[in-house]
Amino acid sequence: MSDTMDITASELLKWDKDSFLPVDIRDRMAFSYGHMPEAINMPESSLTDDMENMLASMKDRRIVVYCQKGIASHDAAVLLREKGFDAYSLSGGYLGWLMESTDTDRLAPNEKSCADIEQDLRKRFRKSIWCRFTRAIREYDLVKENDRIAVCISGGKDSMLMAKLFQELKRHDKFAFELVFLVMDPGYSPENRKLIENNAKRLGIPITIFETDIFDAVFNIENSPCYLCARMRRGNLYSKAQELGCNKIALGHHYDDVIETILMGMLYGGQIQTMMPKLHGTNFEGMELIRPMYLIRESAIKAWRDYNNLHFLQCACKFTETCSSCDKGVDGNNSKRQEIKLLIRELKKVNPFVEGNIFKSVENVNLNTIIAYKKDGVKHHFLDTYDLYDSSDI
Image: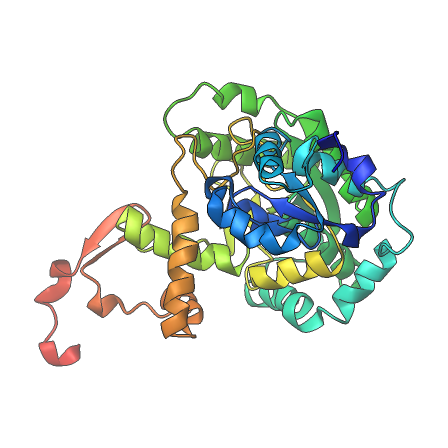
């Protein structure tokens, strides 16, 4: 066992990948967004005898423990060493490893090129991703001739894939339209910004970056900082896109986001609403918001990411850039969206069609069976017209 317990990402990348076991102690949602190859997930809260039992058969292997930034992993490595394991803490955490592994100047010879990744979209992921992307564009009339679209890139898997899909659509050149690949820096750490730049370079995406101070503006807000941050980010994206001559902004929300929003509205908001495939910009005349990933399943996006060994930003705001991850709110509670994800997963065990049924439910609304609804801010109640119809008409 080495006396040196901390190991840097650059040192780790020189090790034979079969000579160590990565143990990710972030929570399960952070792990699902991305993790080191072959890593097993053991959240920090489970660092007990259960963890020791699970790793008992692996005492002949080196254990590399990592968290988000290399803080909590140090204590975990100490604990494992006390139990007799050859354990190491990854200095800089998952973020540090991402920085090293996505550096285009240091990519391994077997890493896929941009051309290979593009070909995979056309062939391997044609049915699950490309065809669903083009179907949404057709069904919801999202892209028109002479559009100038700001493809908004946050740095995550969804927006990066959306950018590649738009590049592919442009190559088909069925009609004239223009693209601007827009990245807003709301106050990222230098490491997170570099990660976005590295991924854009590897994927051949010519990004335009502009800076704002949104993170600083909302950092000391106690009530609903995430809501305010989201509103401010959306407004800044609209404003910059309009300044660049765009008439649309494209966001990377996918099918799972849509069905989760429907259930969240019902269970936590007491209302029936959905995330629309396109919207007119309320405060920006002539601008539209479009969601061309509307019909793409998140599982397909993850499959594309993992097949191409890509690693993207999860969340980089000042509330979550410590070892805690995004599925914990600023008060430490699990997010409502994560609860809905788990609920849908359980419902699917009983009814495999539940996701499709949730999606279709907002396409098949029968107003004759609705107590009340709002239209353009005006509430309509079934009693308003109840006496005008015979019961046989219903």
